[in-house]
Image (cartoon, rainbow, N blue to C red; front, side, top):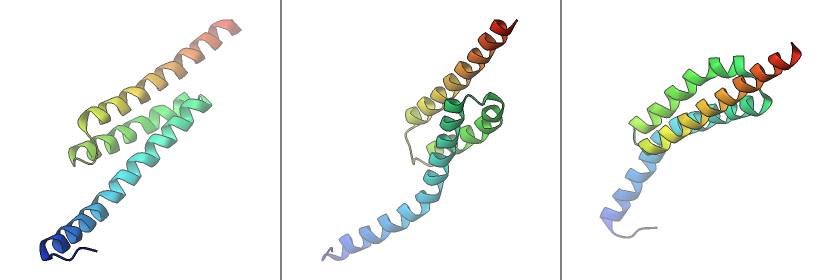
Amino acid sequence: MPVIKSAKKQMRQNNKRRAQRFPIRNQMKTTVKKAQKLIKKGKGAELEKLLPVAYKTIDMAAKKHIIHGNNANRKKSQLARGLASVQAKKKVAVKEEK
């Protein structure tokens, strides 16, 4: 525990800021995990519905400086590539059936 008055104040500020950032970061992480599970399962239709929500939460976290902007772009790119791969697999499967 800090002894100096300014250090005590800094600790209070850090705790308050952490509490404010936590819900946004948690929401972002859960939506990204849901999207990644859908990619693994190959559910493209559900993923297309979830993707705008995931993008929104990632952008919100970047805007509030919870994550770096490049980190946000990387996460969105990974989700987009995952969706593209799921769609490509479905197209190949449809062609093979014919």
